[in-house]
Length: 267
Ligand SMILES: Nc1nc2c(ncn2[C@@H]2O[C@H](COP(=O)(O)OP(=O)(O)OP(=O)(O)O)[C@@H](O)[C@H]2O)c(=O)[nH]1
Ligand SMILES: [Fe+2]
Image (tube, rainbow, N blue to C red; front, side, top):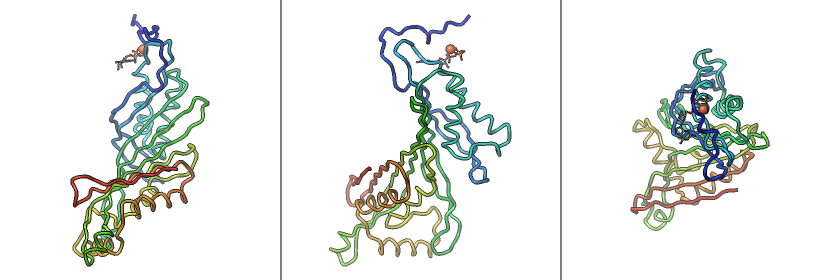
């Protein structure tokens, strides 16, 4: 007979808000607009723990994830989940029948690979973006979601350009956009990525033929921006498009310093 240590009273009767599993890697399939994508996401799943319980039954959180995945893999994937947030909610729904809790969170971190067309040769280039989706079931049973995208672009400094007959310093920059909204709000990760990527001096590309490289350099110099300009542009576009709490952070890896510069704002 197994001893259920988790059910015993702890020495220190403090409730814990988030207890669970993190850095769990697994396979996931998403049927996004009729096309099947396979991901190797990293999961974090937590529930609250009341003051009178020593611990949670950790394996039940893992079971909620593995069972939600198997329903996708075994029943072939057309019944699979239509978005990462829908997958997160399906995991929480399974957890409800396995482990008592009042509040639950599932965080799914992965990469989206989006095919883009190069600016001059029109070839297909596959661009990687870091995305993270959080699905939160509140104590009143309502669901909210947090969508995060991280995009690599570039900035051309307008200040050096104005003071050096057009010569200037150029650097890669990273734009991070987070939208926190009610679960049913229609917000697409791809659209969030486009908002960030269109706010740099120029997007970056994996594949660039010489004609493409020329086009990117032309566009960069036609579009000099401070790190502040990029953050403001992302924020303004995101407020217009997405109904939720917006958080923007841009870091420019300055090529003239050993440090970076940052601009951040939120609604
Ligand atoms: N709460 C808690 N569990 C831990 C900790 N370290 C390891 N464990 C887990 O204890 C789990 C086994 O306990 P349960 O999940 O309750 O497994 P079980 O009792 O066989 O299964 P159930 O019948 O579903 O309760 C293992 O999966 C371990 O990951 C810890 O620090 N806290
Ligand atoms: Fe147990």
